[in-house]
Image 1 (cartoon, rainbow, N blue to C red):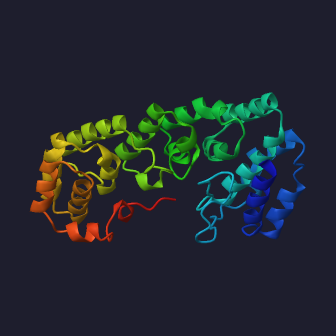
Image 2: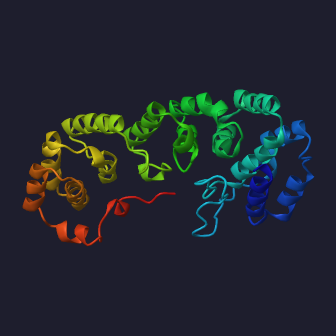
Image 3: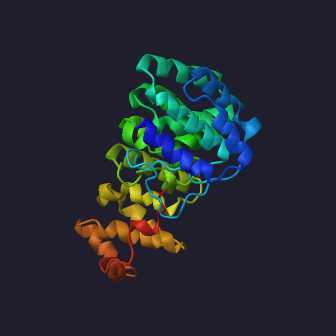
Length: 283
């Protein structure tokens, strides 16, 4: 995988660098590990912070790594991840030692690049403690680099760590739509935590992002009727639509009775015009 990753990233680098920047990247001895590590640290001295824009609809940039994207990274971040792709050819012990050294000495932006590179590094289980620690980080850019538009948590986090990531994203008012795979990893424990969170937010007089309701949709029961009734009375149309979608997915008679009392979106949902994708834009 390492060669295809390097080639894919390099093709994007070429379209975003100046002649001088590309000359510096070409001058790095890729087979000399110490030179690569030095270049990883010194990249900001030689490269601009040009924002990376990949073609619309590129989707899976690297077929072997579903969900991996470099959209809206800056050139330094992309170059650092590209440099790390050359480590993938190393024996496991040597690779882990080099990457751990970079983690131990990294400043903020270097940490962002390291966590961004986790999906393309071999031996994904080795990086799990680092990744779960990043979720607990108080450094916003570090948290974002592992939580948003990064497929590593979706594929490798156990349920507890995944739920912590999702809940912290919601709690910090960050866009859950940017969590890769958010729709596929709903679970009952997460839904119970979200209901507790909603109770606390409503008690404090605060709103709930309407797309959060997607995460509890398979677990709605009669005990949640008060939540649905409150949503139907909301002044926000997104809340009314969310309540309608929740009702449409339940076969319980009391919930269907409530749906019949608030049929505004019923026909359109049944015709497929509205669904949860209207609330989500996944990277």
